[in-house]
Image 1 (cartoon, helix red, strand yellow):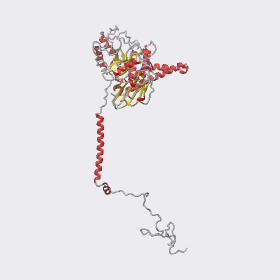
Image 2: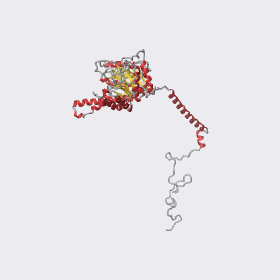
Image 3: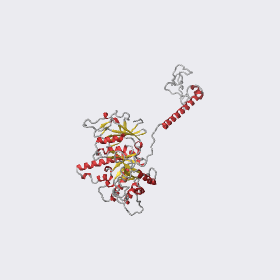
Image 4: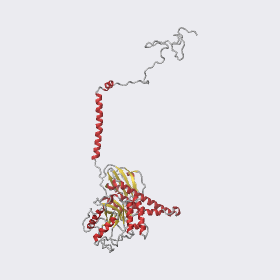
Length: 524
């Protein structure tokens, strides 16, 4: 093909320019644009125009430009000053916080002895099993119970009824515990279960004349006889003794002699031996041949919450007795609380909550509801083989015993781990009877709610006791300084869980509740 003057062959891979043709072919005439760009097809069809949606490439500022924009070279010094000021303020706040923590008042825990941190359990071996004439089986029954009692939170056992009260003080073969070898076996098993054992010497004629037993090593005078008996049992591993304030041994001379023997068997807190004195009247009797009680000779005073009586105390009498103890001033001798007088069975769990939360060591009497052998006897025989009424009765007994064991374990373990219950302050909260809200169908008066606080720092345990047979509701005007909410720890029915609003709380008849509240305010 013949080429014209403006025509040429296009090589493969070569792009044909827009002005490949002459001006008359495919040209787009137009005005001449700025920059000498003509209006022909040699001009770019799309000319980039800067716009707001088109990203621009920013060039970083140099050091000189940054200092100029910031106001000059002084910007570096200002920045250094700000950093130093920040760290100085941070260190100052940290120092002030530490100083506040150091100088702020906080409770100081008094080191407690082992008997102040434990739970006493009064146990008479012949009550542990049914009528049984073989002492060895009684011993085995006691030994089988020891791990179970320890799991409940019991730390020490006071063995009662071990000795014949009419026998000589040197007659170490007890009428209920069989031979001396069996008693030693019981003490060995107690040590394995981490349980301490105290022997009850109440109403024993310790200072009486001993019988002739043929042992030439035995002392002859009464004082030496007592020391001999005390030393003998301490060598077997006994942790202490319990006497009554009416016993002849409750004298300054005798207790001083016992103290001398105790020093031979260790003075450490976990190894020290103790003397527990049982209070048999409304007030502790003074030492024999003395007008006062020597607090250095007695470790624990076992006080009854209820007065001793031949009849069952009414709810009002029980409430009055409890309120008297709650308002009584603290004494120098460490108290141990036991029930004492007779009360309705409906108040049994309430009194247990009270004993476990009062300042001092709780002493719980033998209770068949937490007796493992009694609980096991209920499981003998299937319920299906019983009639409907008998099955319901046994089912109610099993439920009651489970609740009793659960309540006991909860209270004892809470007391063991909470400083507020062990050594916290005690505050009685008087209840305003005018704000007492009883049920509308009540026809007789009912004792008001009794309440107190056990406090340690900002942790408080509120204990509420409804001794009467009627429901009671808390009124905000009763104790306005109390927090509005808390968490249930335990209740007599073990049926209250989780958080609660105190001013919406209604106490059921004969109910006791322990609530844990967190508040830093004062309740005095």
